[in-house]
Amino acid sequence: MIRGFFRLIGLLLLAGAFIFLVYDGARSIADQTLRLTKLGDFWNDINQASQRSFQQMVEGASALLWNNVVKVILNQPAWAVLGVTGILLLLLFRPAKPLIGYGRD
Image (tube, rainbow, N blue to C red):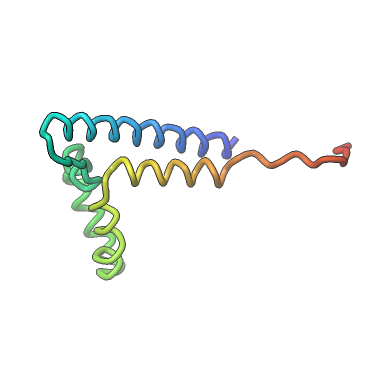
């Protein structure tokens, strides 16, 4: 059941990545320049206070973690981050391969 839940989350993340890819593509065509939505910008548009509280929490644990890892991830295109996370969840929680030649009695 847990495996199915995480596969569903991975599938939803892949759907979100596809939506952002189409959105960025349409904006790029309309503006005639490459336009990408960064994950941090999208998070600010949704709920800016939660991003600030997350930043304070991570900086409280380690400022290097915020500067070297989290800021790099937040500056990536939203479709890439969601797509990679979705693919990883789908691969990690895929069903086990059936054994050939063995009976499971």
